[in-house]
Length: 492
Image (cartoon, rainbow, N blue to C red; front, side, top):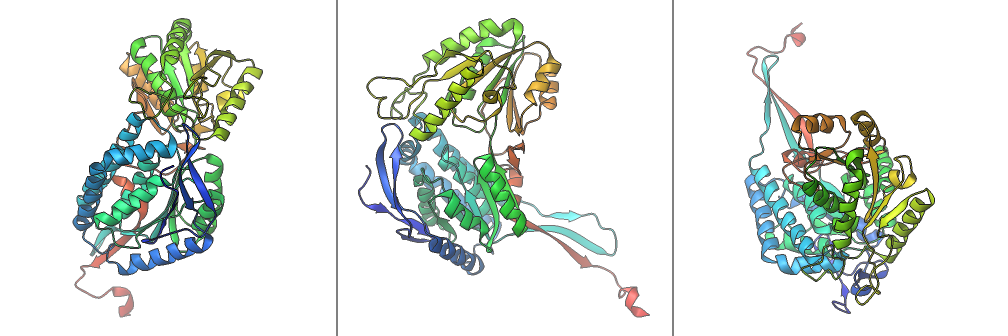
């Protein structure tokens, strides 16, 4: 355990114990508690939002010139980098990801604040073409209090992707981290305060999503919600937002297809498919969990893929050599095991995995072997439902028309991968596949400068990119009259 003392939460800049129940944050590699804290209460939620609204109106943050806010965001990025190793170790404890991966997540968070600082400082308003004796201009202004509801799989990166553009836009932000991973949001709030974000502009309210998340979303002073998580919860938030006439951004689930064409570079494809599904232990919305391989390559490719999966190093997240750490909770692992059992009952064959690793270092944590199933078609439940774990369903395909039909036969449309040496063919296939992001001859690579989001049950709206700031702003049109004579209508 990090400390036996209860961790404070951040209520509009005031660091204090929450008013809710005491709970423990567990290290997924051992099941041991690493922190104890009180969840936020409903009273904490109301106080945080009310005080955030006051800070938004009185702190001067929204009125600062863009380059002045940008300077503070750059300072946040600098502080994250100065504390990068301690933050990465804390992130490792928070959700059990291997230390090499958490270092990348911390670097991503710093880069996100730096990018939005630069985007803010160079953001331009628009003079629109005149249609009369007036000058017209489109401007953007902050909304007020906005909410960021974040997932447990990549906390510091996900929280930075919401917090940085929302602050850049001039808003106050209430962060509701996943109940099981509260630590990184609290660290970011501390760093924002240290960097010069005014007191009250950032709150962090840990607790159950069904209680705290609902209360935040329903609060009349909250003007926008950005949510990353499951589709069921996303739909619930969308219903609340519709009743409030409130905009939302929803980055939800996925069942992403990866397609290996007959002319693919197999070394690249094998490596990319393994990374796409088994990195982060498969706990990723964009995991390439449906694999389609040209039939003429299928047997060779699956053999190589199975060998690669068996060689992956599953173990202690603190080790520099570990590629796959534990799953987030025992309950989540049990859910994944039920899906594998379902796949077998549907006629699937386990080519590798499907079991918990045994031995010293595994028995206390929530580990699971990388798993590959075959013998199923795209209509199987295990091929259609998001598992959110290290489980891949492999299927052969015979022609491009059937490949496109199967790739698009899903309620999800978040991401896709294509492996081919023929760039023209890959381009056409990439345009035909319905997904918010398509990777060609790579997978699971990200740039904060490039918008990200999904279609259909994978969500609404986009994060990242220069336009990401505008997600947290209201657009206003302004007119300046240039006519020499009064408007003629009133002259009689």
